[in-house]
Length: 354
Image (cartoon, rainbow, N blue to C red; front, side, top):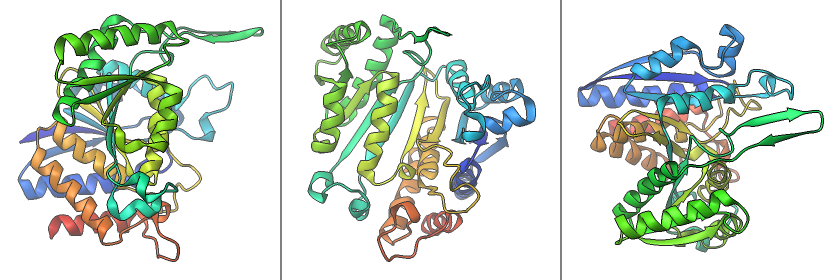
């Protein structure tokens, strides 16, 4: 097959982990006989510096024309001053909206060999396998904003249609797994959450009678993710709650650096990125964990290119590399020599070729 991939390395450790993702993608393509056109494009803080826009028009045009978009990471203290008019995150929000990717899938699975990398007890972590479905283009991040010398406001708005479509994504995914969907809201306080609860009940009752639905307040969900994470299957929630809870859930796996994400819309084109940030404190040192990026490539292969066998092969290669002790600094056991970013990528490529 032939496909065009827009590559947005971004800021901080983004280019470093992206390099390993691209090497793995090229290896998969070569071994399987696929022809992939990879085009690197300016995005984020580096694009602000070079072109005065975190999402230049040429980058957006190339992303729209691509079959999938692969993103490293964006942001950093250089662009985060309180009075800054341009921020890398503005480009990311615009990109999500322009591409129509409203459903963010974030799988969290605890690898048996990495149970010791988490601060939680092993008996809590064994068997954890859950997926967050986060609504990505609505809510408080996209609502009207105002600020004057007396105060500021951020408006949270959701439509029935926005809630219906994201709940359907979560319910379809749950149907393919253990048929258990947890909808997370704050219905005891927020009107948007009361609407969310009503719509989710109707959608699951009328369209997915084989899926069990439970409602959970976001504060209770935050507690139970640590107390009994094995009980969760698919969790669906709004934009801000999902943003916060998925970072918390990453600690189940041991590190933010391990987890991938896929942002999907109505078609096959998606936006794929590790859930970690740009980590400017370690940028340029060659020690960043590339596994979340490489696993994001696997999600790209599965969801946008329709290559489930190749996706599974790459995921197996990451699993085997971890089983054989290929650990970066963030997940290395005490007294064990950690690998750098490039060496971790080499370990995955060696398993792919084995």
